[in-house]
Length: 98
Image (tube, rainbow, N blue to C red; front, side, top):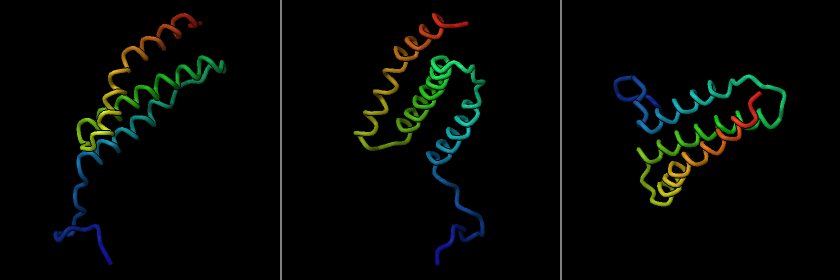
């Protein structure tokens, strides 16, 4: 039988990437606490903005800790596309504010 306890009786500290992922998930839970408007398009745009923000944060964790070239390239594409995607979504939200 294996144990999660180190020889000193304490649980070993998880890798920093695991701590960063856990923090990311907790922050996402808070961000998803938006107030729904009842209008499907506005609610979709609000949730999409939160999801995009979370996706960029997740990609940055991969760039900080990941080593797989394919996954790092995917993460970099997400980060690189974010400003244009965010601006387009913001323009839509501004046009449809009300």
